[in-house]
Image (cartoon, rainbow, N blue to C red; front, side, top):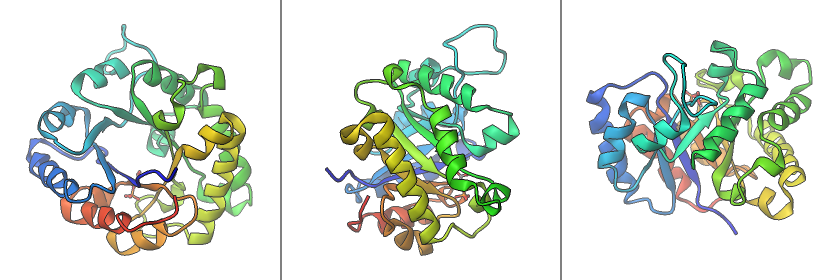
Length: 257
Ligand code: PEP
């Protein structure tokens, strides 16, 4: 089965209520591109207001805690973001791994908690420039992904629908220069093989693998043409409806993913 392309905007720490008009514009445009699944992950403060108005797009969180509740000042749980209207959560983004020292073990615990809260999970992986230059990118991604995913017997039965992987090479994020088609094809092939190994042939083949790192309207079609690319996780270009939906438009053409 070929799944709909999945285009997800990560607003990071951008957006006050003034951005609600942009979310509305994205939602309206998404209703004209039903061949594409469009979602945004705004800051926590905007999850509920966007969810309340959205008719087409899904709304998600950019992180959640690995416990359901308790004495964790400033943290928020999967159950809480679900209660606010989030249907998915992005976990293991490189800005969390580096900026907040999140280990693979912590990301794995967060993924388990998010699944238990009924959320879908977008699990990010990506190597640094130094790792790529040392020729160890493939080994790094295999290890990082394996260590960040809960063990197979801890995963929900509908894992192919609940899990999405985002390959986001750190050196391509926010730089304006995405990875080359060859680099993306190689890494997405490696991730697909690993998913089949971990989840079995049927489920492992169904999980979507997004590419993230400087995706823009003018390079999106070329990226979506790469084998095993099931959509994109978009940072900077998701902040305006015009550029974000330009990417969704590129994804509405049939592509292999
Ligand atoms: C990201 O940080 O998830 C990302 C892909 O950012 P950008 O599109 O701005 O490179």
